[in-house]
Structures are given as C-alpha cells and as structure tokens.
Image (tube, rainbow, N blue to C red):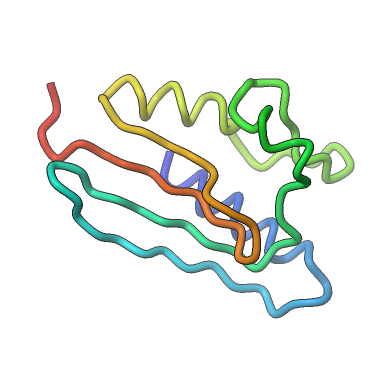
Length: 104
C-alpha cells in the first residue's frame, strides 16, 4: 500500500511540467500510530474530485494510464488493520496514513 501511494505521488509529480518532480515522505509517531505524510509536486486534486477520492469511482484520468491498485483498495487495506488514510491538502498534494503500532 505504501509503495502504491509513493508510486502515485511520483507519477503525479512527473505529470506536472511546471514544477520539478518531487516526492517527500515524512514519518512521525502520534500516540499509538505511525503517521506517514506523502507529499508530491503534482498538479493536485481538483476540489470537486476530493469527496470521491476513496470511493472506488475516482480515477486520476491520465488518459487511461493506471498506476496501481487504487486509493479505494489502499483505504480498505489500511482500515482492515485499524489504520486511517486521508487527503490533507493540495500544494503540495499531501496524503496522510496512520498505521497502528500494535496490530490486532
């Protein structure tokens, strides 16, 4: 899942011709969770698409190019272990993943 999110970020960064491609992974610990923030220099997510990001209906729409398992599948896997995933912001495009340090 983490590899897929990093791959998405790298792909988005490469599609933005106006910025240098960049992906940043920030890791921290909050309470009993490992928090991963994945940032990229891509063009971001259109505001009207944000509510559907994890619905299974969202597609980045890079002319039919697919980069992996999809955000819906990532969300289901992460939540199955008691974790969380959310879209944080654009500029830089940032997703946050919370992974419990103690798995059930």
